[in-house]
Image 1 (spheres, helix red, strand yellow):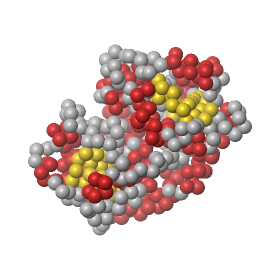
Image 2 (tube, helix red, strand yellow):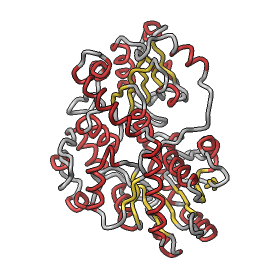
Image 3 (cartoon, helix red, strand yellow):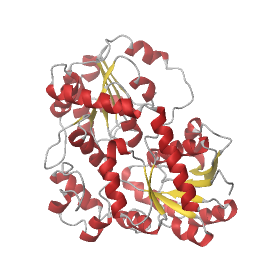
Image 4 (spheres, one colour):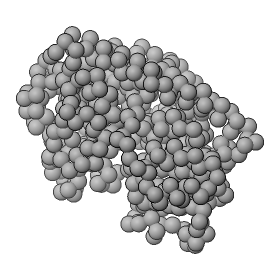
Length: 450
């Protein structure tokens, strides 16, 4: 190891929503002169290559995804399979253990970052390599592990000592978490056992977070884990300069400033057909022009066959539902965008916070649910779409209500979230803030290695 640089290996879960943040962090660390070996499924490399801003320092090392029962032969990431097959994909990832062992013996990195591959610390410890797990959520902590995840009533409340009492779960969310605690997620291992084993065995924990947003929660994590907790700061790396597609420039340019609703739920989220239709009908009900970038719902091959009857005719000239990839960062920066309906994924959330448009949250996963509550209840920078208490379903009316709350100029809620969002945005766009975080992060890595 050189005096000013480290060799760092990255092995994220086979999901675009995990690969991308790991690569964002890799770019920041490479910018500081560190060498990165990034383990990635072979055919997924082209999708990530444009986001590798330092190809001379970040090397993609292809990983062949082994076969697993029920897994299609060409499946590499969660975007290739339905959620019911995620455990099968995790089993396949677990079967790369011997390959990763050989790579680590050959590469001899100083540190390995990982998330769901809970066996990584077992390999690194034998080789004198440090390991850091990228932890998820603020409520997956030892005090909750000891009390268990069985009581829905207990799960509705934050864990003991949690600093934000406003972050409580609805009954349907607590049921979801309780059920998830019993899910076997690959290789006959419970998901929570996988996560807590990673926490226990890794040399340190890493969080995609910053104190300006989550300060008290970060302090809580430090008190909960008897090991270093490293905080990345607001990492969002600008991709190489690209030209905004003319069709979007022309379409968005035909509307007034701040009048368009943009809706996107990430690269992998699929809704049921009923919920998909409620969402697009809710956007229509708002009365403003809208652009929705969504995946077809379960059971449908295309967006067109999933839309409600007569919908396309009614929204002509004022609404669009697009099933392909879009230039989200450029869309959010367009002056016509007034509201962003997001699932609260880590990258999308930072893009929302750093944009000038307001945002509405429609979280899908448990970590997104917690984050959305923090944004809506604690920081009051956005509005979450209301769901039914029993089944946790949203309606077209609840989608419309949330959007109007942030879009209408005379809305009391809208005035509050706009003011709070503007203050936080001014902090997050500071280049000095991002630089100071990554400098501190890099120094803590060197201290960990010794």
